[in-house]
Length: 322
Image 1: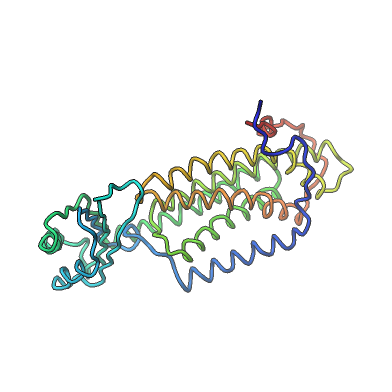
Image 2: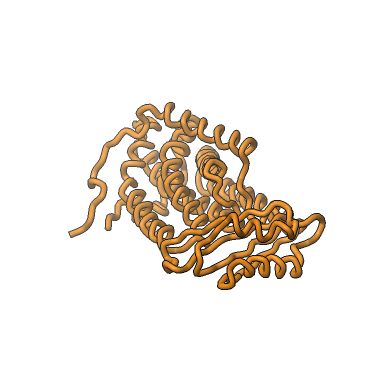
């Protein structure tokens, strides 16, 4: 007996009130841009430059005592955060100490790091420092520019690929959906002030790929149905195509989310930001394929009679359930 999360045949109207959902998406993007310029991202050491020290101890973390111990070192802006994780043992207490870039130095000197460690060991002899990460200002600036280039190039490549495979209207719809996913994800990180580092850039690129895959499957079915049902309006063809691929969309998103939620709960604090970005990206990517990319295609319109025969690429497994 197969598990069916979606009925074999559905006829849900995804375009009922599409102006409202599309407008809500536009407002979400606008709010994300406002948050980016007002609140800003909580950049990690990768993008700001500086040093992050991970401290572990069997004694409870006392942020006030830690701060008092290292105050005489005059390190400037120092952030001390206690890290919680369900995978930690009961007697394992972890703190993350972030030190601002020191003047024009490439990184915090080993002497200052050693002085900090000795100052903390003076108040807690059991404390250990399993990892120290340093990034200089020049490297961090290069990483910011490289990250921006990576995301932009991925979106341009998607635009070119969809343009070649379909029509230009399809490519515009797909790219608008991808931009929506990236912008809204950045807005959520601004709102929640989750640390934004290179792993989040990797998550954004993965989201772009996932959202594109979902969009291509639906657009392939749209192209087939435009040839098959010449008397149906474009809105009816889009709605039919989304319904026909709905089972595949739900099953793919749900199985991916199950794995990601398990990683978020059990994977530890090191990958939690990356996994959160992926979870949010899967949700917003599935949403944008139906409620952003498809309405853009509806608004632009598309020619109905192509001379090229349909190959059915990408849609042969669209109706498969678990």
